[in-house]
Length: 490
Ligand code: SF4
Image 1: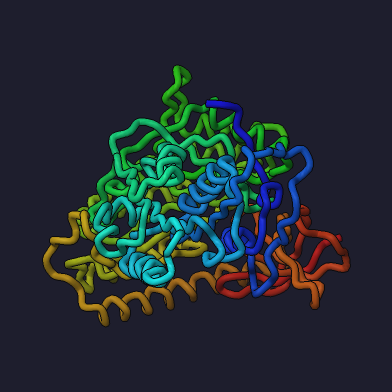
Image 2: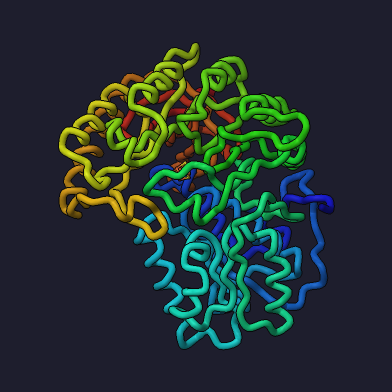
């Protein structure tokens, strides 16, 4: 692999389309209370400027659906395209190549992509329309049947082939696919377009070797492949040199990382090494599987200030019986043991989780156990979902489907219970001060926004200007269930 680069979006011809994508990426993390996300301007000092091969005057538009893994894959895909001389288009209508990086975790996400594809039925003439990501892998060549104007279908496990596939299309190929899952390679790119000037993602592991019965990921992203610790550290050093101070390590099961190089590092060793890179001030990681969550991760967070005091540990259900049906490989008790380790840490660590309600056969008693787990775990936030049957999952064929209205009822009860827990916990934080990385501003009201190390959103007032990208101390003056208001401690 040639030398790699990380480039800010404007260094390679950014425009409205890429700004929109960038705002999506920033906004998801950083647009508290309607604040404007951080404006993205230029390349940070020290960031490598890359002159791509002579542009052929071709442009692309890339829309991303789904998770942070997809966001970061899109940054890499954009880098691959820009490296081939493509530039970002203002809108899909103006682009020569229109790509959708898709999600198929729930049915709604898949429907949305097909609706987008439908828009091109009479307008695709002369354009290359491509589907990437989980839906591409799941539906495969069926996509050509449903939308014959699509030319490229490529799942994430085949992204390393993208330059080759695009070259085939450029030389007149009509339909190309990249749907292999049998790879032990990860998606390494020479250029990654960074869409957020404050936080940078680094994928450390791709795919998943678990087989949760509701989840399409093992089918769409293939088996687990870890990157070498050297490649990860080199990327972290490069990002630090480019001015990034916050790194987020990504993987579907990030903590099952195993260094394939002779070093053979475990996840916690990599975590400590990334945190030790000069210039890195915050390291986050997501998503952890409870099975691979060991006490040594909590000890590392306790000992290393650069490791953020936040753990996202999806539980999915509070009922061991349902967990067994979900093939989650841990019991309620084993999960709660890990929560105890985290709560016993010397510094407070916030904990968030994912919960599914209405899994087939979930009884009222099972659901009550999930509610009681909320009371015990006292999460700082949850992401809650109604179970959605997906093709190529074993749960698809389980009996005792829960009616949609009942799923909605349970979801509402769950969210109400969690809201009360969050409000009560957050109100206790009024008066405390936190370090905030400022990532948003409201120009009219001199109001700023950002996140604490524990990933709490705080909107605050300050007499100062030009705070974007700064680390500042903020005192909490008011708390809501999902965010805080505060004032800059100067
Ligand atoms: S651990 Fe389970 S839920 Fe997570 S990606 Fe793998 S199969 Fe899906």
